[in-house]
Image (cartoon, rainbow, N blue to C red; front, side):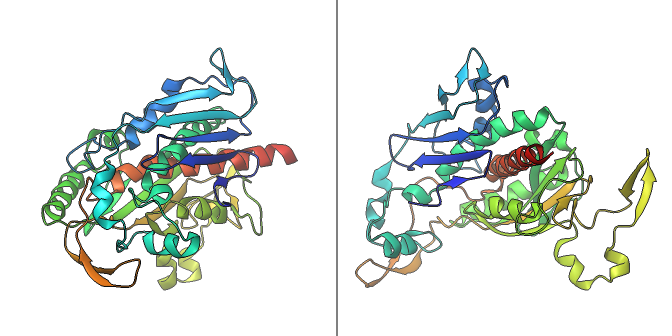
Length: 354
C-alpha cells in the first residue's frame, strides 16, 4: 500500500497495527558515525507513550524500542536502521461491539470503502499508535540536527478556550498537559478533566518552534520549506490545520504591518519582527520557525452517538475502552518528530547541492 513512507534523502517507512504483535520503522539516509543508543530513542518514546497521567489514556505500553540493524558499537553505520516496538497491552475485546459499526470521527467508514476490509481493533493502521514509529525516527533526526545547532520545541498553547500567554520551555515537561505557561496549564488540566467526566473530549492548539536554522533550507517552488513541513505535520491524523508566523491574522493586516523589516545585527541582516514565521519565499530566513497546529478533540468518546453499520442500518453506539480526553500532551513529541525528520531531510538535500 503506498503512502507508508516519508522523506527524500532522510526517509522512513513505518509498519504494524495498533493491536498487532508489534509496530516499527525502517529509517534510511542516516549518516554513519552518529552516536546512537536505544536510550536516545526511548526518551521521546516515553514522552509519547500512553498512561502518563489521569488526562491521558490508561493503556499501559512501555513502548520499549529495540534496534534491529544499522547501529554497531553505539554508532550508526550508514545502512538502514530498523526499530521495533512490541505491543503489550492490547484489549481487543473492547472493540468487538463496534466491529460492524462506523465510529464517528474515525477512519472506519473510509477504510471500509477503500479497501473492503478493516481492522476494527483500535483502528488498526489508522490508529494513533502508529505515531510511536514516527517519534522513534524523529529521535534519530534530532541527533542529526544537534550536530548543526538546530533544536525543535513543541508545547500545548491552547486547550478549548484556555490560552497560554507565556512561553518557558523549562515548564513543558513539568505539567501533565505539556504547556509552556504553568498558570494556564492548571486551567487546561481542569478543563480536560471536566470534559472527560462528561464522557466527552476537547481539542486545542500545539505550537512548534524550530530554532537555530540557518538561511536557505528548502526549495523555492513545490518543495517550499513551509509546504514540506505542512505535509509532514498534516500527516498526523489529529491535526486539522496549520499556520506559520502571523498565520490567519495576515488576513486583517496591511502590507506595511505584515512585512518583516530588516536591520543589521552582528553583521547580518535580521528581521525586527517574525510575521513570516521564519520562512520567506519557501526558504528558511534565519529566524525561529514558528508554527501553530489545530488539534481536533479525540473522536473516541463515551457519549452516545448516532451512526450506521457496514450493512447500512442506522444505529447508536458508545465507544468504550481506554482513550485520551485531549490528545495535545501526547501529540507534542509526534509534532516535534515530524518537524525533525523534515529538517533532517532538508539538511541532507542542502548539503547535496552545496
